[in-house]
Image (cartoon, rainbow, N blue to C red; front, top):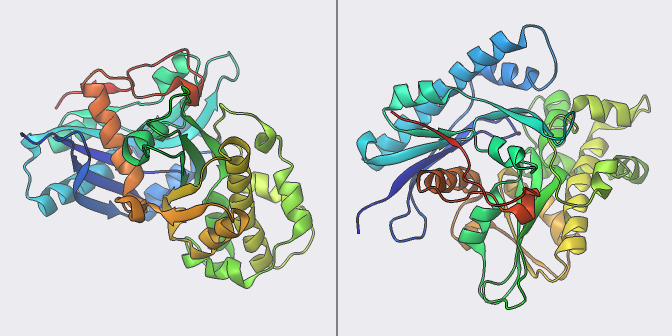
Length: 374
């Protein structure tokens, strides 16, 4: 059977760089042929982070940041091709998500917007490969949240025949997919939504007080004590009580939000880190217990799956659930989202729907994305 090769590129709300996979879908399943990752140049990362909040000359800065992102993406593509020994001409398309800097679905005019900085035309020019970008806006146009989009891929990759499976992606924001048994006869639907902050606040706090981009293994958080009053205050944000479909991002859960919650009370930085970790663990666990109580398996992916302390807290909060990293299910945590956008690019090329209306609240299934020919 001829290879059916796609590249997926993801730079998520953690802003830690680009993950890329080269995947073969020729037998209907996903086989990752190569994986590559690259950190953002310091200036590009700073600009992408700054563009999450209003500032001067945004249109000009965003356009140049899109160019820089396309160049970073192209470097990862070249590494994937070199590592796999596969020529660019053999790749059907690249799925390039872009960098989300604003996400305001259904706001302002009942449509709202979601904005991913990118320059797919430049990426197509630099790589000689067709590029699929702008995955989220069609779902918004159809009345949806535009997010999360990964549950459809999670269903294709992780669903089990005889049991409900939950998948928790912990990037900058955390999102949960609830996958009914594929043999279920009751017409159960896939659910998925953003739980709230994943790594974004923890990473910010660690960078501020430890000078490190993230809390490796959660060791710093584990050295602190959870502050119950602060945790209750953080969890009182109205977002956590909203029913799905719902999605969020750095528009809400950002350093300004955190500063407003902390106020002027003196707290040990390690204790705040422990509390932020507990916020992520406890809100994700509460959502699973509320919406997926029959799930006995929780598969964790994204950068948060590498945080041993965070996984330990999830296991403690979910004693009846087996909590495993996605490696146990055949795909390492850092590869899952990139693989999802390779899969979504394939859906676009094949004119197949990439969203799930049960997840996003859209009026129906839609073909997502726009194709930029090489």
